[in-house]
Image (cartoon, rainbow, N blue to C red; front, side, top):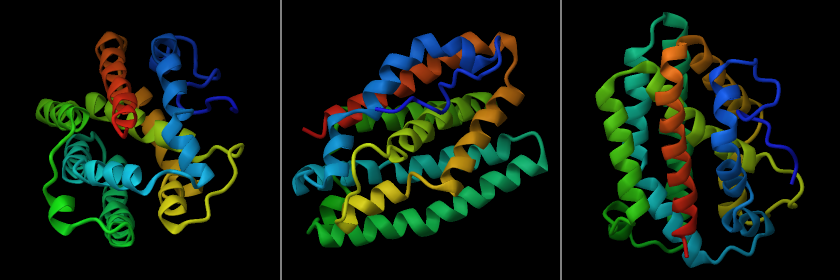
Amino acid sequence: MGPVTLPLTTTAPTGSLLHRARPALEAGWRRCVDHRFVRELFAGVLDDAVLAGYLVQDHQFFDGFLRLLGQALASADRLGSRLVLARQLGMLADDENTYFTDSFRALGVDPVEASAPRLRPSTQAFQQLMSEVVDTRRYPDLLAVLVVMEGVYLDWGSRDDLGEPTRAEHLGWVELHRGPDFTRWCQWLVDELERVCGPDDHERLTALMQRTLALEERFFDECW
């Protein structure tokens, strides 16, 4: 596996949040980026039932994730930041929602199951986390969760050592999480978090990123 590039970068300025948080996050980050789910997805051998179950559960984050972005937009301290967040909200409402609709159809997912499944423990815990962070209305906290949620997916989606999936349901999920637009978005989140957080925020935000990262790994694990 290639080096983890974002946000656990060795070029993060000494004393910055991500430089200080790296020792607490790196092992879990690498496990997510090199997870069995990722390897089987790229290899095109991920079982349909596993992928369908994963997508059904992931789709339950859609509303909460929109609320997370929406609260970040409302809590941002300047117009330029609000415009970036608004553009990302528009993309999610279009591209990602279309992917879910098409993939559920291709995988034969029952519409009732897709809209109201029994939630796995990690799904429930993730929804709780997002709700808690939205309720704080603290811009740095919202960004810290987004940095992990998006950055992990960029890192595994950008891997070039696992081949290229050919099936639309596999390739589509990879393509949503790589490329110049998604890379710019994730880098913006990192830069924005470093801009707005102060030294007094580091301990709280590191713990929040650790909690988010642990849920990402648990969510992958529960696919089986």
